[in-house]
Image (tube, rainbow, N blue to C red):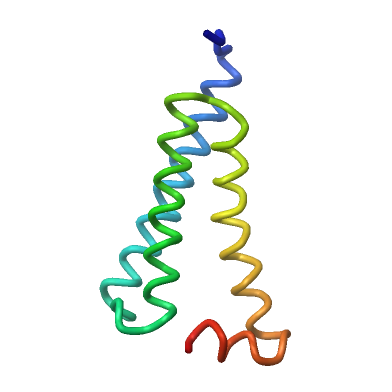
Length: 96
């Protein structure tokens, strides 16, 4: 089993707090604004689930796949949000 240093725990806790926020925000927006009847609602639900899976993976295992999943979940959402303003057709694709 891998021994975790103080730096490892600090990064894991900070990353976990951020992933909790990402998951909570996406779940709250899905419930309050979009619902599951639209494509964006389903994408928000998948993003929340992905954030919490990455969170558990980081806290329990502390391995790179959890960090990579966390970066993909949070970074992917940010890139799509930025891309909706500049890439023609992306907004229509996401919102259905």
